[in-house]
View 1: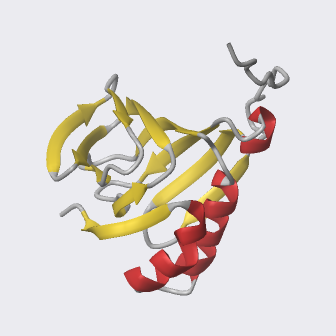
View 2 (view 1 turned 180 degrees about the vertical axis):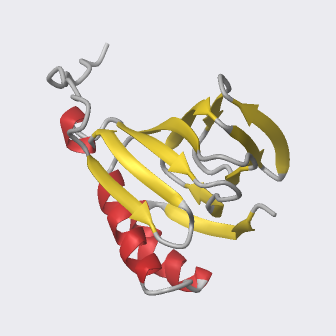
Length: 159
């Protein structure tokens, strides 16, 4: 049996985290466990999503994504099929599956999401934030500039 890599224990203290805002998407990320803390094995982020907000449909080609919805009333779409995701719902999305979500509530929603392997998750979101800060981007530009992260926009945000 192959030896599993071991990374040091990590304690994320409240108030000590990186915040990454995604302009124009109504999304704010709080990095709770950075990629570097786990040797790139995983990254844990808390997301606050404005009412009516969510990302465009997209794919993480190399990462499994796990959502744990804590507050709000979300709708999740995977492979074109939508389903409600109220607080308490957990969703696992394997690599390569097109997905999106939307906060369909009237108040901000909150959930945790984990990406594994993490790769450079924070670098990805910083780059995305910089592109979005310039205004609404062309999906082709997003795909070109974010391809190195294994990310692809596959459609518009959920209506």
